[in-house]
Length: 472
Image 1 (spheres, one colour):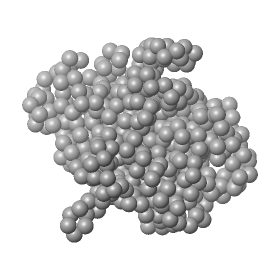
Image 2 (cartoon, rainbow, N blue to C red):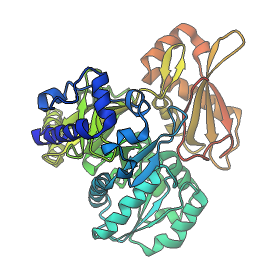
Image 3 (cartoon, rainbow, N blue to C red):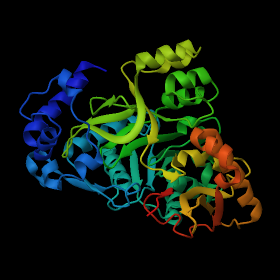
Image 4 (tube, rainbow, N blue to C red):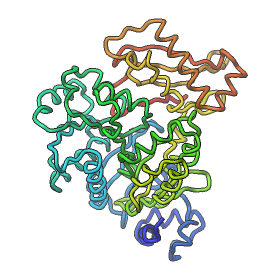
């Protein structure tokens, strides 16, 4: 990490200890005198922020510069997927400028919208959620920066999105569909085949995807072998846009799919485990560390500054020199040469606070998702599901998975049986604790699967899909 990046993080901290009432008190509560100057050495000893010990502990005004909420020019809320209660976050001009700079890189490197007329159909939820409004603000700024881009905002209304694609898409060189992964797959499943022959690219956010999922969506578009058409961005309501895939990062991730040594050295997982998200980030905007427990810590200069903030994503930080060395050691010399010098990347293993607790072990969405990618199921199911743990009158737990059927697909015993087998196999393969539990309990650990009609039972009706229902 460049010392200049750390210097920027230290400078934010120096201002915050003097000008943010909540942060001064937070330091004091954690045994740090807020009057003490912060330098590069002391910065790494500062207490970690979390949602519980900072955001929910202090009232809104105290968390902003000089205790003034007017420092925020735009407000957005979290989905509340982990707590059930959305939280409001304010952002100022600096955060929006930094976001626009990252959108500029995405649309230059992945979509070439500076030279091609581009229609972005924004299928992120509009309203108070960050995905839709942030994307709209970023794209509008791109138009001012010389990109040949227009935006339409149907939000999560799939029928309107398809109609927009049909009406406006033919008038542009290319169309970018932006949205949450399950909604984009749902949209493409319900788009007539002749419309899918347009030059369509995809911008995603909100959850991880697998390379099998990417390949399936590319097949729907008739664009097999063009993985760079799909770009996943990493962002949170707390800290805004954090990072994004590049054509090179996607190529590196795919190279590690069948190379266990490369997967272990880059990502810290074997090829049999869920592959982490791999994105480029900019340390001058989001200074990032990894603590002793493997959690990523972010320092962000914004209307509400965050300092060593733990979102509960696990991962690691890699720079271009490290990645080039690991790729060359695996014989990927040509790919190593594609890694831009000075670039920085994040490996993201996902949240540790969004899980169903089954027999005292954690079941995560990533343990279930691979089951949807089996060839005999991927066209029958949308990919939306809900995991919950139920107890009977004698307090015996059972693991339930509610699954949404694709439009026009009727539920039958064959689909339910297949998904039960696939989800069980996925859990055993990707979750070592479940593997041990299954060997001990046998059929009692086996998931109970129920199929639900398209957009019934709450599926597809929210701003962002919720995959875990925690016990009350």
